[in-house]
Each structure stands twice: as structure tokens, then as C-alpha cells.
Amino acid sequence: MSDLGSWTARSVGEGVGAFDRFFAEEILPRFASPELRRRSDAARLELGSLVLAVTCDAFTVDPLFFPGGDIGTLAVCGTANDLLTEGARPEWLLMSLVLAEQIDPHVVERVLDSIQAQASVSHAHLVGGDTKAISNPRSELIVTMTGLGVVRRQGPALGFETVRSGDELLVTGPIAAHSIAVMSAREGLGFERVVSSDCRDVGLSIGSLVMASPSIRALRDATRGGLIGVVHELADTTGMAVELDVDAVPVAQEVTMAAEMLGVDPLELTNEGCFLIVVEAGTGERMAAELRETCGLDDATVVGQVLETSGPLDRVRLRRDGQVRVSVRSLSIGVPRLC
Image 1 (cartoon, one colour):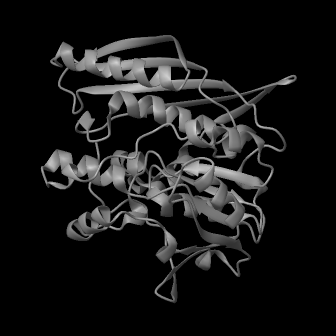
Image 2 (cartoon, helix red, strand yellow; image 1 turned 30 degrees about the vertical axis):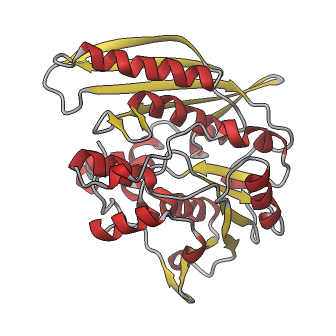
């Protein structure tokens, strides 16, 4: 048992570095399954010739309704995006609702309507679940969603364990809009009038490409810890270095302005509709063009490369304005929490 003072509930819930420590010290020693050690967003389960992907996540957000989405849309899209990382779509869903005793029933009905609408768009079927009521909670509503789908990707399995030196990194679109939209709506900063969350089921755009393209090594949705969090996870998992061209990362002007005013780094902010994709060396520009021209992702861009490393201290390198500096992962985040 580790010293519980090395992590807090908030940092484990939001900070990637603290979660990594918690996962390594508290989870893996107790549940040492090979699938768990992969650290994927979804588990890959092989049942004879049938390969399934399953994921489970709990969703809280404040406010429950924000520009571009709400907690119901977030739950379905987040589940779908996690399954996509294994080359699957959300075919079946299980849902658990934890309700504050004082919550307005009309709020719950609006959330359920959103879940129904997004599940229909994503071609997912709700097949079971549960509800619980709690008194005096911090959150009015918590949605836990489990998603199950058949892995339909052709070719090798996806995962950071397949990444090689020279592979290239892409992002599917602009980053940081979700955090800015939610924080602004909650605090009344005014940016919510011009910035909307990117919350969406990305598989509706790129699903066919993910299932068929042999050049894709791995992909992750850049949620907790933002884009830089996923890059650190990639470097830590592979033991290689990752150089990120910060100047190439797409960020909307309004998001940049809001981040500067709040004193936060867009690289660290949560996204709900942006993926980091790792592709084979030499295929990055072609893949970015296909994402733009075939999938309608106009801002898809090559933003970095996987390299050999001389040691653990230089695994994540940020290139900005022609200068390269090393990024050190912190135990928690330095941005306002969303929930």
C-alpha cells in the first residue's frame, strides 16, 4: 500500500500525472491483468474469432448544459470515442444514473432526451442500467456509461505498443474548445457566446478510415490532461521521445484569447471531439489530407513525430517559435476544474 498522501481525489480525477501514480501504485498491484496494463481507453476482449471492445466511464460536468452539448451528449460521445480507439463502434450501452434527491425532474428528462438523441445518431442501443439517489451531493447528476462493440478494424490491433520511431502524430481538429466553453458558461465570462464545446462522436466522421487504414498505429481522444497529457502517455508507454510542434497545433482564435485571459495553456485543456492519431512514418501528410478531404475535418494537421530518446528526462519535447524545450509532467493540473 502506498502513502495515500501522494494523491488526492481531485488530482486522480483530473490530473493525468496523479492518475498515473494512482494507477501504478493502487490499481495494478491488485488487478494485474495484461489487458489492464495496456492502458487503453477501451479493453480488447478476444472470444474465439469474435473480438469485442468494452469501455466504462463516469461523467460529471458543471454546468450540466453548456454551449455545444450537455452531460447526456457527453456520456454517449465519450463512450463512442473510447471504443473507437480499439476500432469499434458503440453497439450496446449500459447506463447508471446517480441523482441528487433535490434535482429537478425536468432536468433529468432533458438529459435523457439528449442521451436518446445521441444514441440514435451513433446507432447505439441502450440495453440496461440502474439508478441511485444520494443526498447533499456536490453534483446534481452523475452518468456512468458502459459501451460494448465488435472490433471491425481490418489488420493489426491498435495501441501505443505498436508505435515505432519515426511515426508521425496528427490531430483531427482544433483543441481546447470544450474546457473554455464549459468554464465560461459556468463563470459567465462571455466566451460561451463565441466558443462551443467540440463534444461529438468522432467515429461518425473517421470510423470507416480507422477500420480500414493499415497506416494507423494508435489513436486517443485528448480528454483528461488535454493533448499534452496524451503525448506524455504515449512517451511513457513506448519509452520513446515525442516532439510536438506547438505552432502547428490548431487552436481557434477565440479559444486562444480566452486561454490567455485565464492564464491556462490550451495544450492542457480537455477536449471531447479531438483525437491524436499516430501513423506510420511517411504517411502523415497523406492521412491529414484524407481527414480533411474525405472526413470533413478541415483542421486535421500533422503536429509531431516519435523519436528515439536518450533518457526519461527528454521524452516530451515542445517545439515553439523555433525553440525546443522539455515538457515535464506534473502530478495534477493547473487549470480550473470542469466538475
